[in-house]
Length: 158
Image (cartoon, rainbow, N blue to C red; front, top):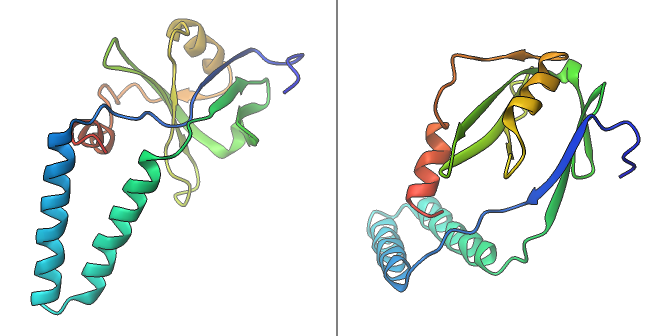
């Protein structure tokens, strides 16, 4: 990425791997096997297939090499890795900054097809990021806590 027209930029790990104990894996395997037995007994083979696919995804996720993603705010949009999003595509943004637990920047898109975009702030000054973004986007000040899906994912170490 050329840095000539960046208003601010930083990098962050593409995934956050939670610390999982052997106990977590034992419980995960036990629950997965119980759900698989339930699927077979109830003859719900689609549910069984979903359980197997979730197990494969968790296994692959555990063994994935984590790469850094470059993020930048420009005067016409944002760059996340290799993708560019124009401000005209983005509905709003908000920042949840409760160190050390949550330090994230969120973007909501106008298109309901695109999911919410979460950008870890790491050690970046959230006030500076907010000031820059307010020039181009509306801030959703009604969002005061981390989204429930992310909070549950962290607690379950998924």
